[in-house]
Image 1 (spheres, rainbow, N blue to C red):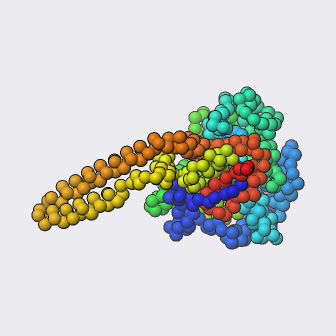
Image 2 (tube, rainbow, N blue to C red):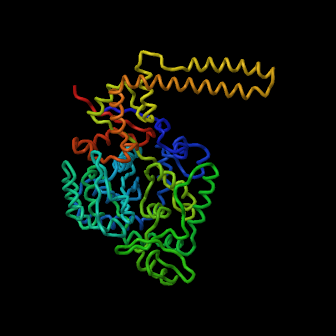
Length: 523
């Protein structure tokens, strides 16, 4: 597998906010602690060494319980036991429980944490580094996880269940297997032999990545929520996070950046069987949105103490919860995740928690062998594929025609002539200058239209080649989106069971560029 690297800016797929972070612009420095450079992990490790022993013990017991019925590898068992040691640290990514793993970038996120831990283990052999996948099991947005795309077709899970998706019974996916092509044995075993989506996801992620020692953590856990009680109490009764996030968001927006998340007065959901709904203050206490549930302050205080598992953090407090229960050095995420973490630094300061290194995941496009064969016949470079389709066509035409189709020199000459005319007009009557400028613009517009017709006529002569380019573009950018945001890993894994290992071998977690993988072509 050959690879090419493209700077993020040249893909035209990322916001200026994200690009400024990648470039380590000084304006963003106040909003994070350390950029993900290898040398910064040593300082981060020293800061996170304060992680409490009690929290480690609770974490290990919770993981042992969650893995009780999972047959896993020695690498996972070793990593789980190692978390008891003060010399062990984690690198974490989180993601929703999309069916069949969802888009390719789910795989990329996990590989990034795995490879980061490998890199750190080599650099700091006296410590131990554990990759963690944090399941977003408490998320209740079923619509976002209910489908995936395989070979250009969308497959959707139908269920009437509500509440935290990790608690859904995945056996209702059985009918979907009748439609999905290729070998789906892994997912059939996961979904049809487990009673919760969380257990099913843990099973297949362990099957795919267990050899690397990846730990799968379900935060929907009573014992882990016990550690979160101080934050639950503060958010319910003091609303600290709202004030701090709003201050940071205002500062970021003053720099011209659009912020990604909005803090509420209360950033917690009420979590119960079939229910995950926001908690709001009322004039006489608290209520759960879209239900008849009402609580007094005293009742909530008792619930915090006795049933902390009934409180589920939203996007504002989930990172805080994560960093309270994991000896974590870095969080790996996509562009939107990276940016909303920058809104949270003051919240971490308030709770006296080390702010983790915020690390972009690996980004990639995979060009399989059949597509590569077609692509190489076009004479284009891989980075050209990021261009808008019509620009791509024009670019190819201008590079492959024997004719000079451009009128740039003629346009330049016309501009020079009219500049001389404007000078003369100014001497005669300065009010004539706008008229001359308008005529100049009119002539240039006509020349540009002629040039467009030249190119359009040449396109007709090369229609077959342009259709081939269009097919390649549509294959690699399904629906006009990046491949990694639409296609499922089974597009490649079913044909090549070594696909994931190949990605692990080739991805560099600290190379912040877009990777294009070109599959080997026989012959």
